[in-house]
Length: 177
Image (cartoon, rainbow, N blue to C red; front, side, top):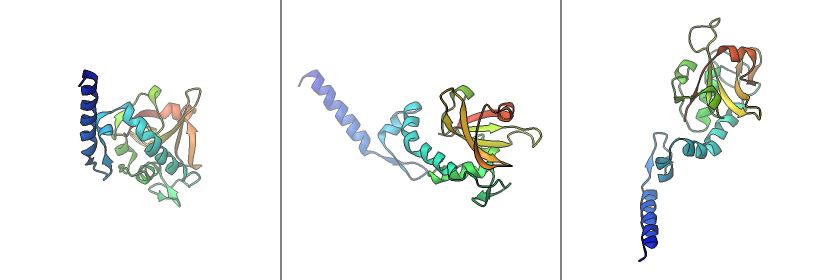
């Protein structure tokens, strides 16, 4: 057999065997060889097409829902419940409070935000530390970031991160995946 033939047969056997061995993740979903081998951007690209899109669609289904401290449904919801419910709709578990959510995943620079990332705010007039969370829904052509959250006056709505209030109270961002 020629060397190239041996190489191709070896690759076929390697990937064929790897694809047969699947293990379940903690969420009960199967993980194939591809998602175990390729991490970071490639994995995120695969996930974005389905799971992140699902999270964003679930969050947008709450648009217009009134804000209610401690609320967890379409009769009234707070910022962290919006995030928790949206991720749950896509099959992921998220902590209940914005402070706990701010410790989930890995930190992301503001300049590297992508849809599906969480943005956190700290307003000293409201409390100490993280006081609010939103979900990045779009990166607009000029680089501005659009995110969904609950507003005490407007309920669930989308805003730009560059809005003066959010630019002033922005604390950090996390990538939950």
